[in-house]
Image 1 (cartoon, rainbow, N blue to C red):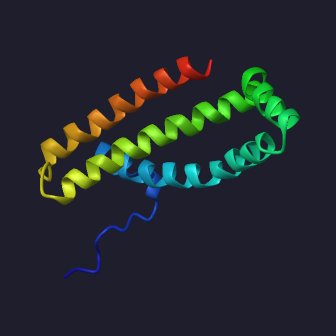
Image 2 (cartoon, rainbow, N blue to C red):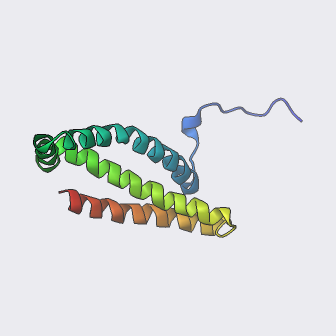
Length: 125
């Protein structure tokens, strides 16, 4: 083996395939969902504190753009995480492991996520 091989340590120069990006984003969406639980638990705690707390939580979700945006982001993240997770589970049983079918499955995950994001936006707003 030659020691004169070029070494590229700049990871920003690599072009990752869609399959890798979906896998990385699946992990990121799991972290987003975990962190987003703080928002949901706080809102849930407020709504259970009494009638005034429930009205406050309901008002926050109906009028606050920030709360609506966080809700939409969490729903979109949940949709992506679910669809990418199903892709991973299907691949675990041996279906779609070839490069072409895995790339098509990654495209389907992205397309389904876009559809779910639009539906979540219509539902929230």
